[in-house]
Image (cartoon, rainbow, N blue to C red; front, side):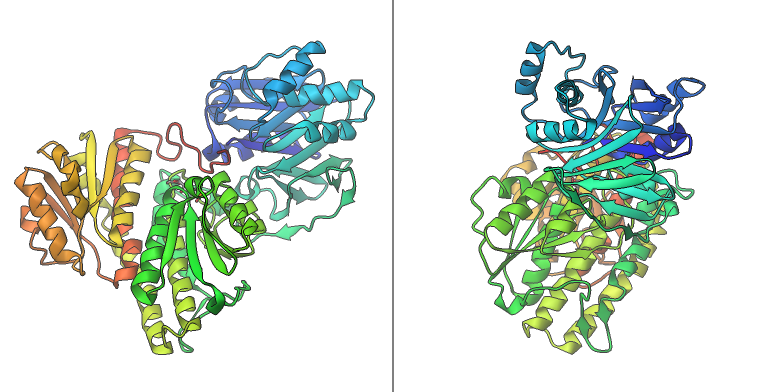
Length: 607
Ligand code: F6R
């Protein structure tokens, strides 16, 4: 889970690479490095720390200049974060940056050691330049040496490779993301599109086992057998400004505030209010009437979207949905079959476990539908169908706008399915469309209350543990609220179904435990009131979130935050917003690294 970038062209590469690398820091930020090719010499700088530290290290260093180069930001897997484990790695005149994991590196390392190769790091990556050098010494040319090396590797890789002797940059990929940015006489490589948006909007999405060779202003792509292949150039409509903070202190805050707009963007073109239908014109959905079962599978926040999607389908359509965490799904015997639909949800489209779940579903004959935000991502390319959330680039490591657009899209999919199965008529669809159209405005009213949530954050920031309670469709919402708090503030928060509290967590309750309860005035209202009583009786510090202005427990709460009302299946899209802001403000007040919390990476491309 690292970020890699590369550049070859006529311009000075160092600034281009540092700039692009900063935009990839969300993928890993424990160490960084850069290699620059200058007239047949490659100079390297590596540091333990962030890209800004790397920038300081190379500023004013006349050796670190050149018109071709590679750079890397790391999230350690093999070998502690340190200068010697930072990429690029070098053997003789071959220099490599890598994202992924080489599973058979120990075995390869032993063989190479016997041939006299000396290793300087603890990483799996370092075997790659050594293998290439080994093949060059055996008499193969550079490209064939790379191809021969790739055939020896087991595991995943996105690679950038350069060599002193020749002005050529090679990129290769297998199960780790890599795009090529195309501009006039110059080529870029990067782990994802936003890193390059201010340089180009033309991209080639490499497929697994592709090897791209950039030389003399030309690009050739080969398959692993050395046969030349063609890949189309796509024009993307995201802009560089979308990947900037735009005056906000953090990306997370900017992305929370973007939610009204990006939810509208996700609805546009799909809702046909007059006709009373929801259409996914971009998507060839299979005949839904033939689908015997629906599954929803994902990781982390996207998994919370699955749990909410299940409630949407079950509460409105009475269609059962099975949900699972991708890393569990892939290693059990998921009884998914032909004529079943497996919905995979992912912001990045690069989460290794979710991709593996998609592959498992495909193998078993299911139709795989991905709900994805990142264009050209592996999940989007390899699923049978993809519906894109239009959240734009999400840079903050904690997912916010991707989540609410996933919920909006799931709601649309539920309406579409309801129509196809004759479970909803046009009037019912129209009514539901009317409700979702009001969501952006309702979220805006919460965003306008950000100062109130900041005051609450100030009140609660010193507590060390939180319990979040919710019921029904709002249990996953409180799970998401607790996850946000943990991720960005490092405060322990546990989410529980309110009715389950008495089976254990109730033992934790005293005046030192803030209990955050989400209690709308829906069918769960009365039961949740009883659970709140149980908290109050034990002197729990109640922080209540509700859409019921007359909530009977509000007088007993230490603090109450009111949220706008909506229909049951849409409640989470609104009620998660105050939790996002609450977590954000606590983290900001505590001074944590909000956009790049410790130990986390945005897309988890390893198991
Ligand atoms: C939480 C968060 C993670 C991701 C998870 C899945 O804020 O961002 O839990 O939701 O890693 O990532 P995607 O959606 O890219 O598959």
